[in-house]
Image (tube, rainbow, N blue to C red; front, side, top):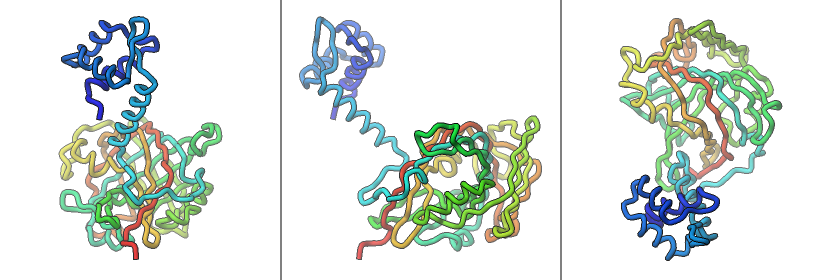
Length: 341
C-alpha cells in the first residue's frame, strides 16, 4: 500500500507533462501538507515509480500503473453500491438498462407509513427499512429529458413525465449481509413507449408499469403537478400545488431536524430492487447530488395514501423540490437471497 505522501508526490509529477524539478516538487508537496517532501520523493524513486530525466522528475511506466491502481481503489472505496462476492451482471439487453437521462425538475413527497401495511406489498425477502420509528414511501414525480441508451445523442432521447412510489427497504442476502435500497410499489408514465420498455424487463419487473395523463406546470414560484392514471391502473390520482421557494428547515411536525438529517435515509438511495425466484435484482443509478430543498405544499391530494393500501396510518412528513440532476443506469445485477441447495 502506497503511503499518502508518496501518492501525493506521484500525483504532483503526473499532472505536469514535462515533470517537475526537485525544488518545484518540494514546494508543491509542502503546500499540500507533506512535512518531509524529500523522503516522499526518495520513496517513489526507490520503488521505481519515478525517475529523474534532464534534472526533472517524471513518473515511470510503473508509476503511471500505480496511479491507475490507486484511482481504481479510491473509486471502489467510494462506490455507494459495490458488488459483493457472488453478485453477477444479468444478460438483459444493454440498451434497456444502461441508459442515461436528466431530471429537469422533480418533487419528492415523503410519507411516513405503517410498517405492517407496507410489508404486505413487498415480496420476500424485502422488508421495510425503519427510520425514526416508521416506514417510508416517497412519491417521486419528475420531468425527464433525453432518456436514451448511453453513448447515443440527446437528439434521439425521449422526454416524458414519470411518477414512482419508492419504498425504503432492505434485504439479507445469502451470506447474511444486509443491503438497503428502494422498491417501487407503483409507477406510471405518460409515454407509452417508455411504459413498454419498462415492462420489457421481465427479470426486474416489480409490478406492471402503468400509463397516466400527467402535467407539470410552473407559474412563478408555484409548481402544479397532476397524474390521472388510465382506467386499467386505478388508485393513483395525484394533484398538488407547491410553493417552491427553497426552505432550509422542515415543516412543523416533521420527524427530521433538517436536510442533513434525512439525507442518508431518504436521499442517499442508489439501488432499486426487483425479486424473482431466489434472486434479488439490483438496478443501480449513478447520479449527480440532489440539490434538494424543502418546499411547501399549498394543495395536495394523493389517492394512494388517502384511500389506497397504505391508508389509514400514512402521514405526509415533508416535501423536497430539486432541479437539474443527471442520471445514469449501471448494468443490471443480481444476487441470491437464499442459500444454495
